[in-house]
Every structure is written in C-alpha cells, then in structure tokens.
Amino acid sequence: MFDFRPAPDCPKPEAYRQLVEAADALTSGEPDAVANMANVAALLWDFLPDLNWAGFYRMVDGELVLGPFMGRPACIRIPLGKGVCGVAAADAETQLVEDVHAFPGHIACDSVTNSELVVPVIRDGGVVAVIDLDSPSKARFDGEDREGIEALAAILSNRI
Image 1 (cartoon, one colour):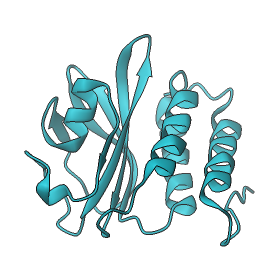
Image 2 (cartoon, rainbow, N blue to C red):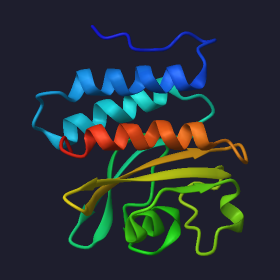
Image 3 (cartoon, rainbow, N blue to C red):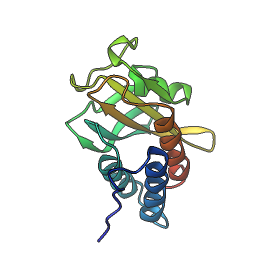
Image 4 (cartoon, helix red, strand yellow):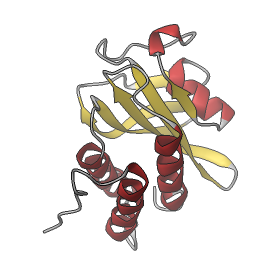
C-alpha cells in the first residue's frame, strides 16, 4: 500500500519535492510507460489542489495522443502547434497560461478549465509526451508549479 500524500499545510516547494520523490519511487525500474504515466497522473491528482484534469498526452506519429489521466473525458488527438498542449510540444517549452480563454487557438476539451500548465517531457532532444494540468481557477499555476512539474518531467524522461 502506498500513501504519498503531503500534509495539508506543506509548503509548495516541499510538496513538489515529495511528489518527485514519490514518482521516482513508483516508476524506478518499471519499464512500462503506460503504467508509469498512470501512477504519476494519480499522484498529481492527489498532490495538487484545485485541478480538474491532470495527466499526459503522448507523442505518436507527429501528434499528441491522450495518455493516462485523472479528470473528465478529454480530447483524444491534438495536432502540434494547436492549443496549449500542442504549442508546448511543438516548441518543446513549458506553457504556463493564467487564462486559457485568452490563449490564441486554445482547445476547450473541458469548458470548466480556466488556467493550464503544460510541461514537455523531453528525451534525446525530442518531446515524447507532455504533462498537462488544468484548473477551474484563473492564474492557478505559478513559477513554483512550473519548477516542480519540470523536475517531475526530467525524472520521467527515460521512464515513459
């Protein structure tokens, strides 16, 4: 049995340190990418408050394809350069969007989403997936969230 949840009053940097540590423990030595993404999606859901979606899009034949996630049903395929996820994958750069409705070309998979953080997972110089976090609150994500999820993406780069 695993119980990786941080204390409710845990400072954000410490919560991210614990999240990365838990993800490392769960994925270390496991060769199945889908199993690893599924467990990490569950960790994200448990660790991070105020989300309505947390999970992965995988790079498959030049487009993003839905991977394991927690939340409501989502768009299955996203072309590179389209929406927040597609831009993050095309540019290989994190996208922190305070108001998705002001983002050019935003794809509304869930009308409840108001802010989004998308971090590319890069292996051997190429994007293999993106970690996508959605929130119903505007400006939910900040630099600490960005740093925490980028650290998570770094350890997952050879595990998914």
